Length: 178
Image 1: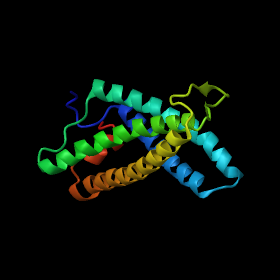
Image 2: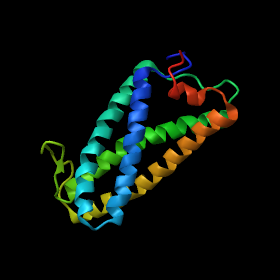
Image 3: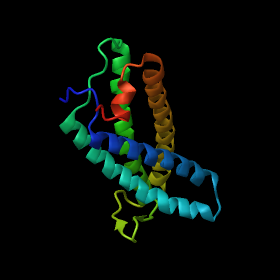
């Protein structure tokens, strides 16, 4: 386990890159649901490959995190807060993996290809089925709301640590510690 006070450069790069991509995905998803215009088709064309990019990045991120570890939480941080921090990170990682997989399965069940940039198609991971499509769509929607709430909680906790506690938790991901 890494006993430094800061995350590695690779961890910070992955974190902030994925933060931007996930926020973009949440806004694109809202735009897709709210729009029936031609933009809807364009948003779907961006949403699918971006989801697969997030899936690949989260796999890399898990490997980097397992290899590098994480800085310890402040010793004076109450036990329940430490537990919530660990559980919320597990939830974030779980959602970052589940959302793209659910989206891919949903699109597969709808009989549509997951087209990446350059026209490359991913194979379906679920059989074409209107019944499965409807359920996967519902699950994808509910988990998107849960991801949004979890991201807001993560942001709120980061601001609490940075502005109220001033305990180094926010700076451990924001700076190199040099």
